Image 1 (tube, rainbow, N blue to C red):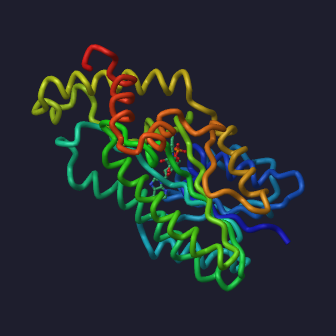
Image 2 (image 1 turned 60 degrees about the vertical axis):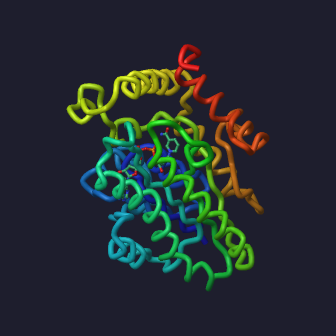
Image 3 (image 1 turned 120 degrees about the vertical axis):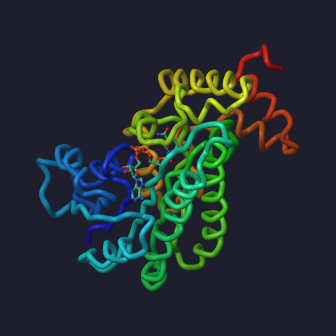
Length: 289
Ligand code: NAD
């Protein structure tokens, strides 16, 4: 029998690449349900899998912020079970905290945090009945260490860490493995899709000059990190495959292969002051120290 995989957020990026890779498995090991909020965006995925037989891939509508949409997608899984659930949908939000609207903050928490939790909730009872399962969640360095101008994004991703760690403890009694795939920068549509305060935006006019100049530096730093150090989705997919194929997967996988040095610093110096000064130095350069 094929392993039934359901992935959220498959219209682009990591979700799309993972869906394509698993659906093209030469041994046809997987039946993939690639889900996306907006089916009008399915062309890109279809383009990547056009040579495939229909029996390894189905595309379903699923908006992770809508419980009904999640349940409808679940009901359309022909096998009536999901062996591997991949909660991947997520969005970013960037800008000085004081200019972010309550709506935009709610939206990020709705998708990243409650979206992930609601998705897991919907598939958990069946996995418990099966007495086996895998839950993989696309995590972020921003879930392990704070990043300026990403307060709410980081809050959502830190929260995921807490939710998944808590679940992992319980679910080992059900032979259900929870794994976080912790990504640094990845070349995807993430930077295009994220909500971001742009430098010319009128909302930034009310922000003080120091915050603005630090934000400008941050954006430059972010741009160069994505340009120089971003991984490709194929690299991320390999790590997902490692976790999927391992008989006893780890709770955390770091896609770069190592714990990021600043995350390590945060762990080794738990009072936090060295992390905060080191990150500030990295992002804003020496002159502000
Ligand atoms: P992406 O923007 O290409 O993909 C995110 C997907 O989530 C999109 O297809 C989007 O349509 C979907 N999505 C958004 N809201 C949704 C909703 N309500 N319901 C269903 N789907 C929804 O970016 P990506 O980099 O592939 O992002 C995938 C995951 O990786 C996210 O959780 C993101 O936080 C995480 N991540 C990305 C990076 C990076 O640098 N790209 C780094 C760390 C973590």
